[in-house]
Image (cartoon, rainbow, N blue to C red; front, side, top):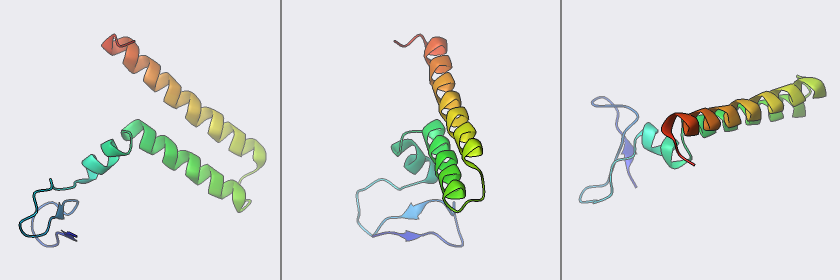
Length: 88
């Protein structure tokens, strides 16, 4: 397994073991491998809202607004991207 690079280079790059032919993992490759920036940020927002509601830091109404807003923003972003690129 690789180790995180420390003093030199990009700190988000994980160095591979000597002789390894696997590509280096960067933060952007992890995010895009997980589904992209939009999906990762939506998942983070929904997870945050879930835990805040679980520990009763926000009300059920605030949780519902957070979920509807996050899902709505995600769908609107996907739709806008498809319109812009002409994808079906």
